[in-house]
Image (tube, rainbow, N blue to C red):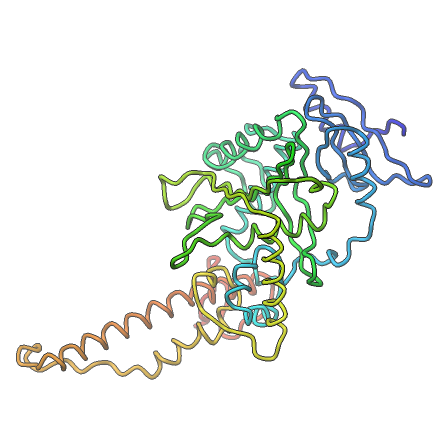
Length: 403
């Protein structure tokens, strides 16, 4: 092995030097005369490994372990070459409840599947966490920084990034801690099923699967009530099973697997940031079997279709029969005839029927309003992409009917 300088790492070393901390040189890992990756000492944290594109592969307790990670990164990544998986971790909960959603989503143009400004913020803050953990940025330097299409605000740093980074730093500073950051992993037994784990940490015989949630809406739990039983978050189960399959040496001898969601902000202002549960290898094995069966059903001729809370971020709602059905019901809705004399002389059954019609009408309006947001967002994204949405044009950043 020989020292090798790099523009990217040079910037990192300058940042560390500003903090008055000496850094070790970057070491190239060579294979047959070709550079396959790099190592750099992180002092008490261990040795960080990078692939040949200078993407971090994680931090390990010693140089041999880090070099092994570099060697593994050279292996072909198939079936992980695609950007997104139709059976990936982020959609696992929806696929479990509604296998038919897989085929419906496939009909939506890929660039229209993520059009929310909230998604842009979440993506940016995930990227910011990578910069913080890699020590390429500080919390202070992130304020005002544009990542993708989103500019990180001071509130983002103080209320979201700072508490999450403090929790993560405490774990990573534990003696002997090894970790993978933004690691793509393949799910066993299902071709093309993969996902990206935000952070994997091993300390002793315990492996932590950590997922960052930077949305400030509904609280997301690792363990949540469903009827008479508690259900483990499918996304975290997916990541754990896929990581165990893809990183066998990292999981070798692991006795505890802890699934953790870090969500610093939500509509529940009193909620704890950390939601965790410990799972067994047997529970991961059971989930693999269940998810495989559901994915097979998704590819069948008549997969199960069901509407529910898991539809919230589904891009196929504009073409889903379970969501477009209320439009047809609304078209056939007959407005109730006002009761004579304001209902003063109406019999109880007649009044109840009238009130039932009012409730049904309001339910239909609510269902259509919910669908309108998705329709509008996708139309706006299509117009911004230069596509033609018949009868509509952009006006002040909104998709409006041409007049």
